Image 1 (spheres, helix red, strand yellow):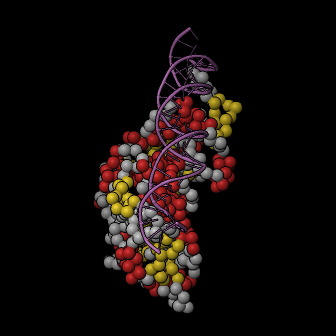
Image 2: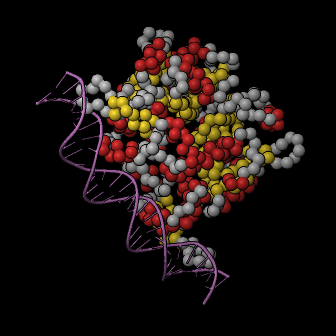
Image 3: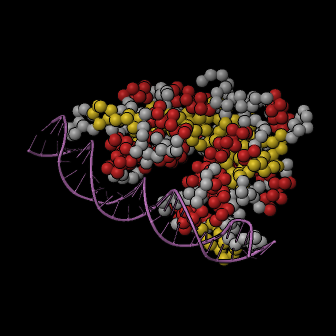
Length: 242
Length: 242
DNA sequence: CCAAAAGTGTTCAGGATACACCCATGA
DNA sequence: TCATGGGTGTATCCTGAACACTTTTGG
């Protein structure tokens, strides 16, 4: 990171991904001093004095995971003066950033990525891991609380905006979209009614292509017309996908 | 404010009030050095190292305006390294807080109060003013941008949660509630349909009392059953008021 | 008795839900 | 030819929108 570091403010990013059936969150390995057992935390870092926080979050994410051009929005500020509890956490911060300040305020970000082969290659290079959201165990600091806040945001955004397409591959099937809603919101959706609803959403482009190599009737592939959506969105009312 | 001040983080609070027909935002006077002409800003201050930010916001609001026990939630972080532009602003900050740091990150809060006689008495003691949201002129720093963010939040909260009652007096009429929605969202609502919708909302208590001293048919007064709502809210689905 | 806002019901169109069978492909 | 998930239509219910007149009070 460049130039002067602000010793009391950090950014942490909750990155969600979807592999077609389950929701994942991206964690990075934290080197522990004592025993060698690995522990995981959210990607994050102290901020530079010369960047706004959106930029800090973007740069941090790229530095730690190689991800860029991903969806990113501010989530919440966590500021409890005692949010860094353990001696171990304190020592890790000192060793990593040379900072001994007792109190660090973290501004958290909410991010979504399409998990495809290139993303898997990139994220495997760093010491990162895609963890199933249902099976989170130990995460460092108060990062579990932050992830829960991210999940809330995911649910409300899924219902208010066409954010789902940030999690799906460019070309996707209706079933994948439905699986995403079902997994994230924890609900069952009637497939026929879901398709009917999608017919009224004007920014889904049906492609000529179909799935291949599946041993059942291959599904048609679709694409989200993001350009069209961004243009119309200002003028028109809100389009709800679900 | 007590103890150590963090020189790079502040809180600013957007307080909305409703006088029965128009939406207001609370501003405090800023003493200018040069000419004596008053300028207004949002209530806010630098933070103490010993408080979480919710507490800082609460205390700041009480210190500057006398308001307490009001609705308060985190709004957004404004962090542009050049958000403090003018020399005048810089000098004001140095004179007020003794801080010369170039960059201040502000964590903003969204707040709602019921404007009644006692609130008017309290807020008139400080150098504060309730400004009509439609008629905002000069406000200091980037506070206009912050107020606009607050307005967005107000609109989405009004549609998602029963937050309207934080802006109305304890006992209110249906018409006041409708006026609030119309003013904040900038829409017209059919009164009959509005009343029908309210009948399905289980936490409105119709009182025996009526308006007095109006030279037309007096309206029945209602109260929001906040206790009941808070209890049921967890178990049940979301109640949408509008 | 007049002015002003309160309060009240019905009709209609569009959206949400529930539900069962045939189709295309790989193995 | 079988197993697997893809894709389709209809009937019913519910919700939201449009719309006009009578009632109660103060002056």
